[in-house]
Picture 1 (cartoon, one colour):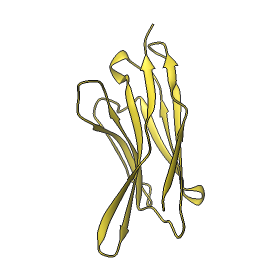
Picture 2: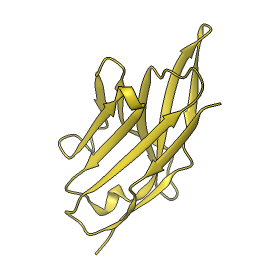
Picture 3: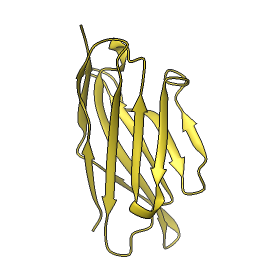
Picture 4: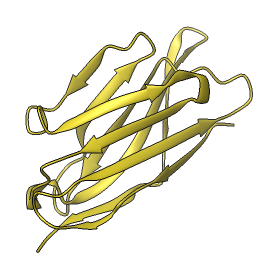
Length: 119
C-alpha cells in the first residue's frame, strides 16, 4: 500500500513564498514520476508540475518561472517551491505519484493541502 504525506501549505500574502513537500512510502515502492496538481473552488483539477525519476520536469504555463519542482529520489520525496504567489494560485494542492507496474500505470494521490494567497 502506498502512502503519501503532504506538508507545507497555509496562508501567504501575494508575492510571498511557500514550499510544499510530499513523502511517499510503500513496500517495494518505486515511483516513475511524482508531481503536484491543484483544484480551485468551482474549477477542475489541473496539473501544476511533474518530475520523472530521470529528472525531466513539466510545468503549467501559469506557474513557469515562479514554481520549481524537485525530487529526492532516495527518500521518494517531491517538493514544490512556490514563489511570487498570486491570489489565483489559491487552491487545494494534491501530490501525485505514478508507478508503472505489470504493464499499466497506477496513480496514487495525497489527501490535499490548502494554499491560500490573500492579503
